[in-house]
Length: 279
Image (cartoon, rainbow, N blue to C red; front, top):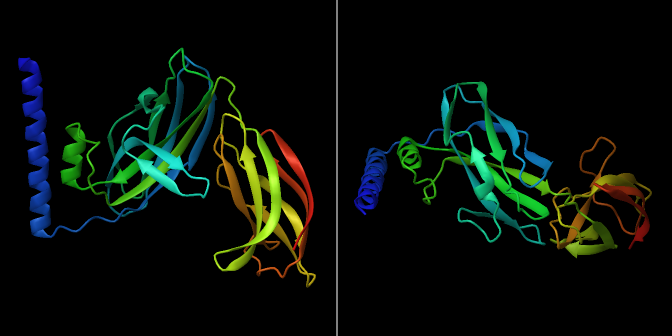
């Protein structure tokens, strides 16, 4: 019991010290340092088995002319069928973040340089088949916030000067997507006519559409239709945009409908042949 009280007192002292620094900085008008950080890769798509440790590393690049200290933690995230993303500090139902081990909580990256950061995912032996999803958040912090993080208060809702969130997908025990195309059509969205494709994922891991369609509009202009590259999570039905691109991959002029399109759209485990007229 005494040990518990002492731990609570120590945590309270650390929090009060951190808040004092925050108040002092605010009173002095201390400006936030710029957050000039890049992270590679932008996401991880891994496969593994229950009871097996999976280790990976990412590179944190500091583009600023001065050293930058960042805080690193895991967060949960959600993605709606409409394409709206949400970030969650608290553990979501079914979260696999307790399986994740980070190399450290903070990292100082020298000016115009980079440092590697390692993390591990260790699913328990009884982990079911499915997809473990989380994000690694790399956040710019001020000295007061660093004090809170080092004292074990990283879950506190403190402001940050910038954040890059790297998505990590771990397909466990053979989990995989299963995509089906339900409809390809044109429709009005955001005040403009667009080509749309509706995709359902009946598998137990996320999937993405890739590839392109050769298209021609009613004025005879040729271009490509490229599917929006965002994920379709297990159990989701999503309507994705088919974005017009020119030969160089740049955005094309808005097509004049009807549009004829044909070609192949790919996904992890297969492809779809397409030959449609979008009116």
